Image 1 (spheres, protein in one colour):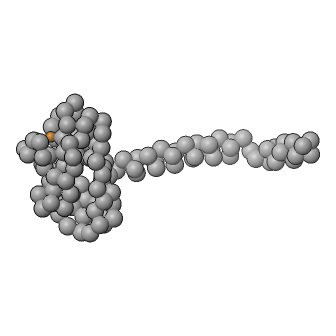
Image 2: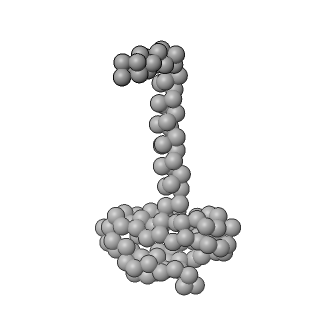
Image 3: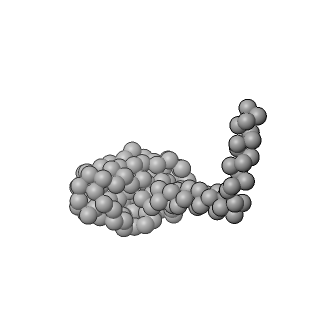
Length: 120
Ligand SMILES: [Cu+2]
């Protein structure tokens, strides 16, 4: 154990402090970027509208709709590719778009709410 501690101290002395700080910062930054990337395919529902209204993704992408309103909404594809149940406040619905196409959808409860997913 003592030998290990000595080795550890020696190893730590070899790593300049600045490198260590940089490594920690980079780790933090990549974590933050990963979260941003994850949020890229999220459509939020706010004030009876989808944001973004139009989203372009590549085949195989999972899109998540997240309801931030205090009333339920749903997501219904006009061509019946997907249809969610009512999504309650702070709940979500996800759908994976396997192949290319244009998907126009509405909220089944408020058909004036419209959105479009373009897969290409
Ligand atoms: Cu709605």
